[in-house]
Length: 122
Image (cartoon, rainbow, N blue to C red; front, top):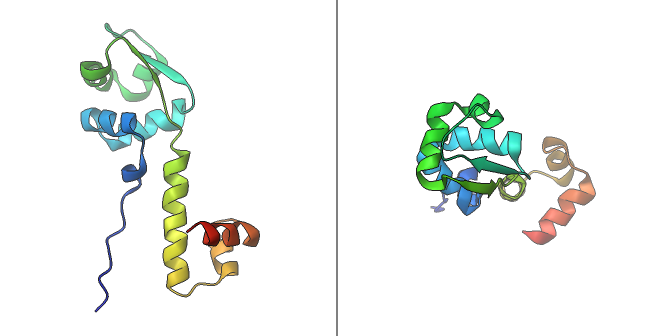
């Protein structure tokens, strides 16, 4: 009988800041922050004022982030590496399950060349 490891959630591939923030406000909130501010800096104020961050996640979540990151300017990761790592893992599983290169390319909206490149990396 094959011992199949359960797939890891995408959050397992997140950078340290994202994981630490998720412990304070939850994964969904951190994903919102990365989707809207990824690749830029955000400031976690000591005293929250109306800001794009508060409008996005609410005052309670900003206060929770402030417990650990108060007064800090944080570089928000885009999360692309995590998503690509997870996608490549799923491609490896599909290949192992017998899907062909063309099927995988169409499923993940990649070129066949891109899929072959991923095969070489995994």
